[in-house]
Length: 155
Image 1 (cartoon, rainbow, N blue to C red):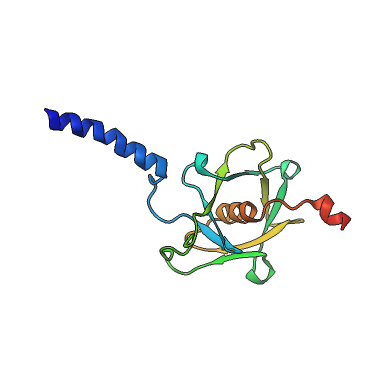
Image 2: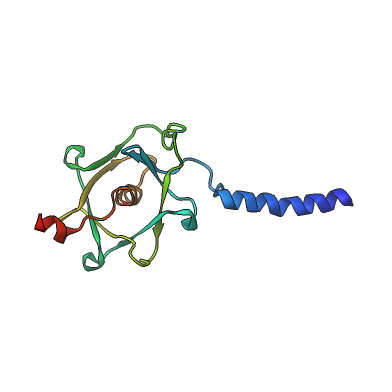
């Protein structure tokens, strides 16, 4: 009976440990490295250092990301032709900076308008088995931040 009580008390602790580390979802998450800093999509939203959201309304967007049809015209390119990502390819030296994709805008978080047309703060090209267009846009905005069009125009 004592063994059953110990087992019953250990299971919630193991679940809490998994939840705290964010290990519920197995497998690699999209990750990039820019200027020695790793940026990765967060498993759990509350773990993220930065949140981004997406909109279909360009007037609500704070960042415009254009989907490019060729890699040469893009600011950020993700291509692969393999089914799995290299183990440990990102975040070897320090823990990655985590970015979460939120359903709604909160505070000063960037709101991304993803389109094939029009002006863009960033242009992305994605041909990947492990990255979606949303992942790539979230990572580049999470890594680089928002461009401020008014400031750029006044230079």
